[in-house]
Length: 213
Image 1 (spheres, rainbow, N blue to C red):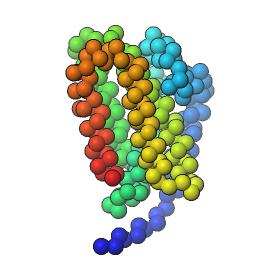
Image 2 (image 1 turned 90 degrees about the horizontal axis):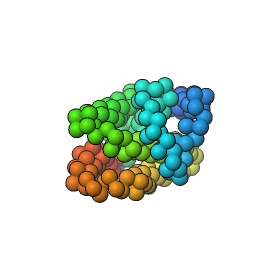
Image 3 (image 1 turned 135 degrees about the vertical axis):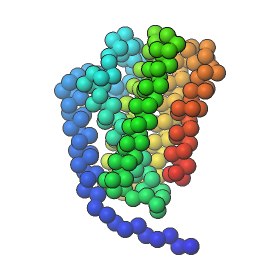
């Protein structure tokens, strides 16, 4: 059966979202230029994560909230674009983007709540502080890269597959870097780490890429 061509729709709202993300970067730079630089290049600077763990800034800190919002919007834009290019049942309208954004936001917040609950419940905050901060930091740094790749893909001749493979590559890099930097904790609690990865990391990604591919 021949696939039906998608109807071209107005996507000027994407420009507004990108403008919002640029404004968020400017705000982050004005709040703390050094921390912003640290998160952008955190893959090459383990000491920055150590400093963050020592300072242990609140999630409700203005800088952290803006950075979390930036990453959530960027991930949502990426998912929306990939769904749009891979599925004839999905169009990147603003309403569909809001649905994806709500799902991604809910997922991230639920993960943070469960991590907070488990840490408090089993009194292991000190042991897991570096682990959770490094995981979050790597998410933030790949979000900045995804933002650039997204813009290049949408507004240039690059194929959509470039964004897909870039996303997969960045997720693998994040996973490897996270294991390497936390290898002592992970291998000492390997069974629990595998359960965590399967339940909160792999399962949602598997469902997402089943939809995309």
